[in-house]
Length: 127
Image (cartoon, rainbow, N blue to C red; front, side, top):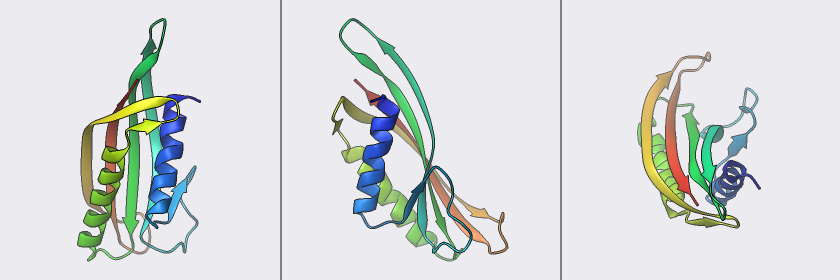
């Protein structure tokens, strides 16, 4: 399996185990309950030698909450998601290490209802 897909599949499973509503492949339909997690963009750079493939996967993870006054809940969810990422050390084909995590929380006015939007951009190294 491709490294980014293996990572994506593992993250999806681990996030669901924590009880979060998590979506991939597209945002949920209007009316979906908040808060929810969306596994979004993924980018991979890799190289290989005779014996192994190694490189970097950048995974974006979003959190949306329907109540802008719930910043603490969004922050706690992001902290939990970072913990999931940092604890991920192995998938069936690769070893993983988190190198960097960028986090943002901002207001989202793209819908009729004002939302709170947090997201992580996680840089993983694999070998």
